[in-house]
Amino acid sequence: MAFTRDHFLQQPLAEAAFRRHPVQPQMASNDAAFLKSSMTEGVVAGDMDFQESVVFHAVRGPDAQPHLSPQARALPVLQQYGRIAITLGDVGVMSPINEENLSETERLGLDAFRLRSEQSYRKAKANRPANALTWGGDGPRAPLDKGDLERSFDPPPGAPAAYRLVGRVAAGLVIVSGPGALAFTQAERTKIVAEVQNAHAWLSSQSPAKDVTFVPIINQVDVTAADNPQGGGYESQEQFWRDEALSQLGHDAGTAGIAQFLQSMRQSVAADYYYCAFFTKYTTFHFAYAHPESAYLVLNYYNDSWGPDNIDRVFAHESCHIFGAPDEYALARCECGGSWGVFGRPNINCESCAPSGGEPCLMKANTWSMCAMTPYHVGYNGLPAV
Image 1 (cartoon, rainbow, N blue to C red):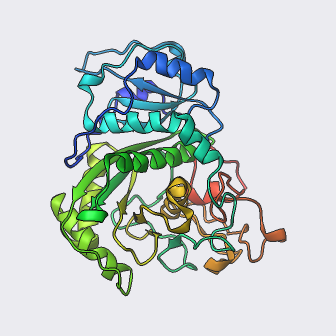
Image 2: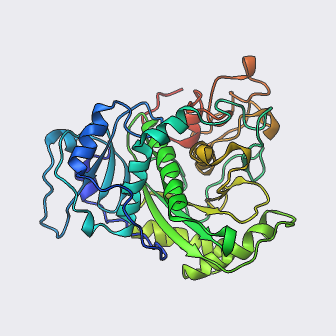
Image 3: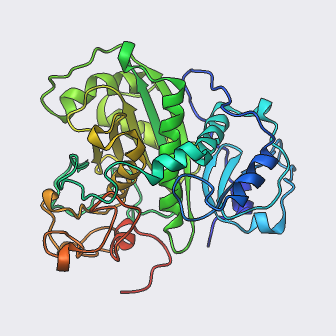
């Protein structure tokens, strides 16, 4: 069953622990006019090939009822930022949003949507660097699954036995600012959320059942640790800023603290599944990588030679690792066999052994495409039996 707005109204609101930078509006406008003008443009946000709408639910008590048309109530909810819902499709004319009463989470989600809808952002996506190049080919370096690249997927400790991309998916974003040049500006924080929002919109839209709703939980944390550019490994370069950030969020150090954060996040928004991502300017051992066994990602803001305009696809690629999808590019030493994801499907689109190198797929290259097996690997609902 698709998540409609009626379902959305029955769920707890997602309140961010956004620390502690005031979020200023990037655009002053009547939201009804803004949405109406966006809808008439055809491509609403980023480089998606479908329309999206923003709906504000003025829920102030258990008996409050929003003024939504039957059309609006029937559309799937792709993402939820507090009372702000981003939906698949055109809701028509809506009442204006009173922006003075938005929470920080709601404001950042709305500003990110507006950024994605700007012509300059959409033009950057249309001309993104290294478009369609294979991860790890002749272009920039590849993002990584930090775990054993040949192993089958194991869900993180405490997770449901069938870890898959369905239902309400809590997505913790921890934006870690350091001193001096390691700090994020407000524009960069909005950029990060917009890139994640673009990725989540695409991943939600790919589900045949249209039943995936991402619920971002945003944390902005300032730490004092110095950079460690020499490093020596993933953990040695990650732990000093990551653990200080976890401490500020009230959790233990290391993977134990990450597990605490994930469980707290899951409970706060009644999520079916969950993961988190740390964004930083600190030097990392690799610019983007996944810890599937612990359900978290690490991404450097500069995104190596792919650049910030490709954060969305790198983030989406790494998110698919969390839900069971293997790499399909040759440098990852992929093989066409194996048993991946909740459905246990082989990796038949592996570049090393698939006919003609396989078909276009996000797990192989910088593209908004999925091969025939990746939807099974991430565990979408509504797939045909194979």
